[in-house]
Image 1 (cartoon, helix red, strand yellow):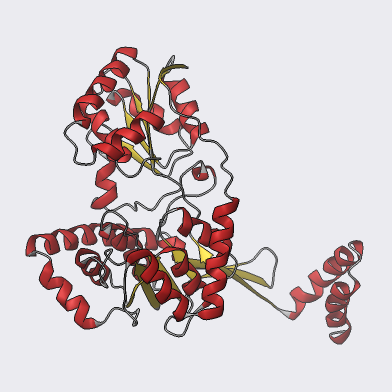
Image 2 (cartoon, rainbow, N blue to C red):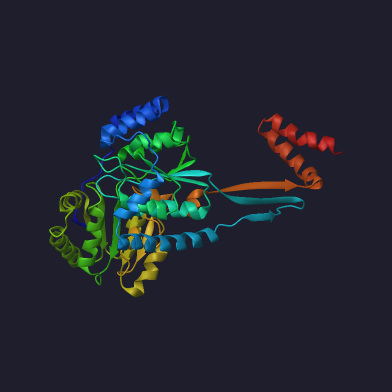
Length: 425
């Protein structure tokens, strides 16, 4: 593997100050509840609202501030996301009456979590698409209480109207004007205005991510995510302008986002470099995108597609695009197993998945795709086993269990089996 454009190496930062700051915020919320939340809203977003829950009137007002076309677009994207979520739900079924021995019956039930919070980032952009990506799978899964939170537009006391509309379209029942680590703490431990939930999902900045890490155990989370990333596997037939556009779509997320190409053709790599420079000047987000690309953009030259596939599996990217000749696509795909979401062929832009095609855009980063996929209907479901057995089956298995338990030195375990035999002789 040769390097045409190198990136900075990510270093293991000293995150002790971040951990300490977030820990303090969590403690403040636990001890002072809403008082702390209102103070943090004022400090970080210049928000003066005392009632954190968004009212029905605010949601109705948001619809008036969003154009009919924008509402229709949100609803169209929601329809695709819901259709795919419903299809996913159908693949997760109950298991009944598996009998490994006569009289023993095993199975599992598929049970939705009772409540969840969908964290929808605000920051520099109203990321209303995330409301759809989180709320709709939760609804399809059958979660009874679906809540959401998002920071207000800085200097106001309102969440962005597009985000509110998207939350409403997604079927979210409780919406709170709140963001940051303090929001994660509130939904984990509860305050006067906010009842805690069983699961928190959604992306956020380093403070939100660290808060999810620290609150995990008290509350479930989807995963701990870092900066966005895309890896493109390409051969000589790929269009450099298209690949450049896909790289910059990731780069404009933030200054630490990563766009990476692994190609078998150095001439394509060089053409991509030139296309990126041309397209950067056309972006309103040039400052962020250029910083990200200069620091973390990377172009590598592989000896062949097999080497490219091996590299992708080792990297385990959040988004993985395969842009190769049609006759090579199946071979490449069959060799891939570590990725958050896969985009096949030059027609399939990663941004289509970000918004409207139907798959989820809340995905694992920083190598987490080695052990987990992204948010989906199953994120909101628990697969819980059960068993029952006849007296005859109990008498048959109890001696085995007794011997195994005594072999571990756990006499109480053994007696729980043995007493049943004694009572049924």
